[in-house]
Amino acid sequence: MITWAEFKEIFVNGTWRQNSSLVQMLGMCPLLAMTTSLVNGAMLSLATIFVMGSSGFVVALLRNFIPYEIRIPVFILVAAALVTVVDLGMNAYMHSMYNILGIFIPLIITNCIVLARIEAFAAKNGPLQSLFDGAFMGVGMLWTLSLLGAIREFIGAGTFLSGIEAVIPDLHHYQVLPADYPGFLVSILPPGAFIVLACMVAAKNWYEAKAAERANRKPPEPLATAGCH
Amino acid sequence: MDFSTPPYLLKNASVTRVMAQVLLALVPAIAVYAWLIGPAILIQIALATMTALVAETLMLKVRNRPLALFLTDGSAVVTGWLIALVFPPLAPWWLVVVGTLFAIVVAKHLYGGLGQNPFNPAMIAFAVCIVSFPAFMSQWPNQALHLGLLDQFQVIFGLMPRLDALTAATPLDALKTALKLDEAGIGVPALLANRNVYGSFAGHGWEWIALSYLVGGLWMWQRKIITWQVPTGFLGALFLISGALWLYHPDRFASPLFHLFAGGSMLGAFFIATDPVSGATTPRGKLIFGAGAGLLTYLIRVFGGYPDGVAFAVLLLNICVPLIDLYTQPPIFGMKDGK
Image (tube, rainbow over all chains, first blue to last red; front, side):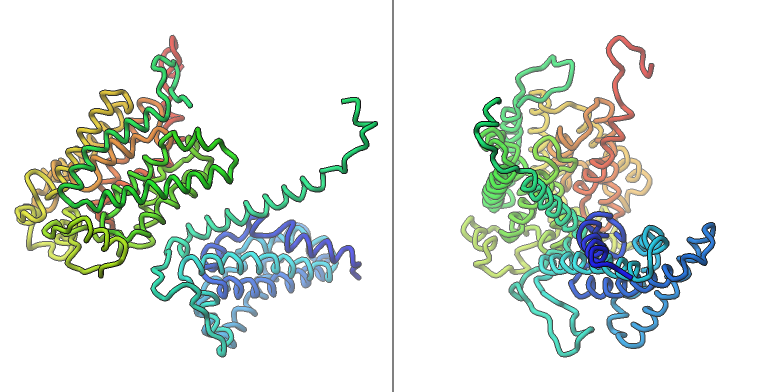
């Protein structure tokens, strides 16, 4: 079915190495629009996780029956059907959240990352692998968008977890900064998303460069062999 | 650090010397500003300068750049002064600090520091703050009210309540609001007859500051720190479009003289659009850059949502600079144009 090594590879690829937002830079439109707060970013990502995992699984099951020439429309149809499931389900059971996310739920289908993973992975791999690939790509998006949303929300409004009431009615958001904090509106507007995302990408690249440097640094060689320099 | 463009006829224009002369050219306007509007501008300049230098030091440290070389080049001080001059003088202290931090850290150093920034840092500070804090950024001082230095200090640092009576609309703002409220009623001439809005030849009080910017700018041109193209393009385009519309409908549009000396026109034309880093570099390109900025300033000012448009006009033209420079390359010496 799926080996542990395969699973680990898929996990690291999805959540870190091929991270949809930080590395592949896919799905910028929902990223700009929905990461105004942690809750919004996380909820959209959860919906995307469901769509990507299930569409990967279904397409991988059908992959040997889909004619090569018309594969893209078929992939889109499968994914669109699953998006409709999420759309109707959220409308029925999480209506207040659905009102906030609005058009961005149906628009998950236009998110390049969905079709990209189906085409690049699910069409060539087994159903279990594809399920995990889609889901972990979504998890990569989940942590990125949550962090981005949390930073933008903190700078922009001084709150943490605002809007959590719409998901879990018993919880309340926290006002982290003083109540008379005037709010840094640019952070909530789309330019703020670009600036914060750019800082996150820079931080990831910086971390990886440091890690590569550490890996390359060889232990000091014995003096006898180094003497020829 | 020298900068000059080929064929290197002018030499020895170090960044420090240029920046020092730019600061000197701003001094008359600052003096008039402090005299007419109030000494609060001096507090804001001090705040902006300190913030700019601290931010510059921190960013240079982070980026492992030589501190002494870049700190003494004066570019951060110029950015700080320009920010203080375009912000409302009675704005709370943190506003100018946030604006300056954003200008130095994001608009300047994240793009690679002096010489690498595609956007004018001072204008980025203005744009970010007017989008984020529109209420604070539109509280311009009421000139009928004369506050001492201590009172203005207390207002800026929040030790005194921020009363509505402290602030009043700028001439451009008053014009815009009046036209929006009553399209048919008061025409522009009637509004401009109001001495609280219109002084001797342009906006009350602000006209003399604008005139001082013009004097400082002409001195910079005489010292060859700036070339004639950008200010001429900027003010020429502003003059032409405002003149055309004024002739077409004098009740609806203010005179060219008013537009040339209102808001940030003079400051923008001589001190902001002439930024050698974020502006166009070819002679014809500078003319186009200036004209585009002047035209957009007028359009945003008269038809847009903001009372003045210099910042957005300059930023939009900054984006066009690579294109403008590409298509206005002067012919190589000895070659026919375009061949």
